[in-house]
Image (cartoon, rainbow, N blue to C red; front, side, top):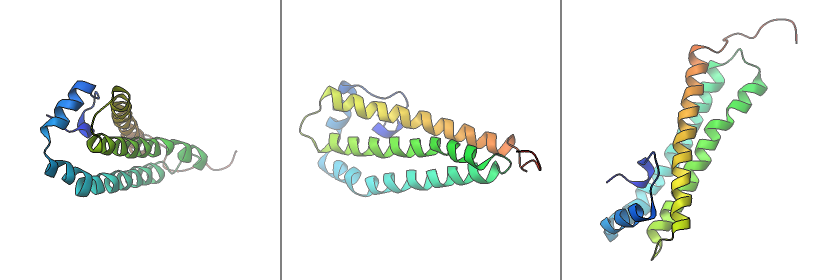
Length: 138
C-alpha cells in the first residue's frame, strides 16, 4: 500500500484507517522522526531548485513575470508542508475524522498538481523562453 504522500489521487477515510492500522509503533515513530525531517527538507530544496531553474532559464522574460511564475513552485512547497503536518497529526491521533483526512488528501493532490505545473513551467523556461531580453522599447 502506498504511503499518503505518494497517492496522486488522494485517499479516503477508509484507506487512511487501513494504512494507519498497518503501521506498528516503530513505523509511526520512523515517519514522525527521520522521514518527517527529510520530507521537510526535500520540498524546500526542490522548490529552491525549481525556482532557480525558472529564474535562470527564462532570462529573456521580464523579471516581474519570472517572479510571478515562481509562485507555482512556492505553492507546491506550501501544499507539501501542510500535507506533512496533517499526515503527522493523523498518525499521532487516536482516531481519524473524515474532515482531517479529506483536508490532508486535498493537500496531497494539490501538491502533485503544483509540482507538475512547476515542472512544466521549468520545461518551458528551459526550452522555449527567450534567453535574451529585447533591447530598446519598454
